[in-house]
Length: 262
Image (cartoon, rainbow, N blue to C red; front, side, top):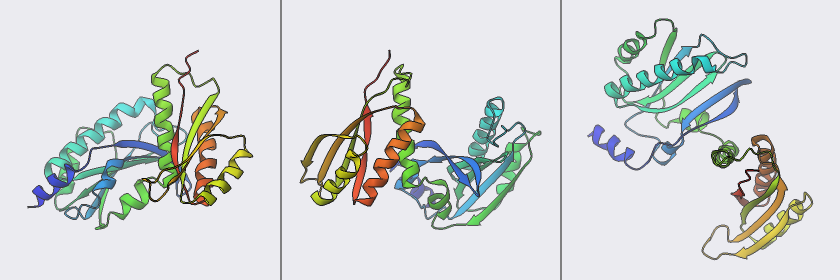
């Protein structure tokens, strides 16, 4: 019965791994997480969180993993995932890399004999120190409140995806160009107040509409400004628009721009 429930849940989502940078206990950190799990978490038959901590041997000065150690760390994670999923029908939810350590996270049903599965995997990597732990977490608070990105972090991930698409199309990101943004509001008053704020920062109105089908946020706004599109610049620009939208009962929907190859 448990296996059928897990299989049914996993048919409802697709893996969507991505990463973002954060500060965990004031330490610069990289977090990778399966964003797709938001559609099915928590899995009631997997109430225990399991984490495995690997001590890196060649970390960067900022505590993250080095390019020279990337392949072996990936191999360790792959084998741990393979062993633990095979023995425990576990869900691999994410990893934290910080301060010279990598923590790999799973949610599992039973935790009996997890040490055996972990130790068998780590036998292939005798040069690496590790430890593990388990904890009851029926509501998957570790996933929702620690691994899963905040709304702004999620928006920054979306920004990077657009930038990655530009680079994949041979855009060097050097050239400034018009960047278009879409925001939706609950009322015309909210939209007008937002517009008054952003036009002071040089944004131009492309269009304003009322879309009855969008019940919660029917007042749309399309604006544009010439900007840089590197990650830092676009994050600064979008954060201003995103935060201002929050202040005016709005929903920042995203941005797009042209591909510039010259």
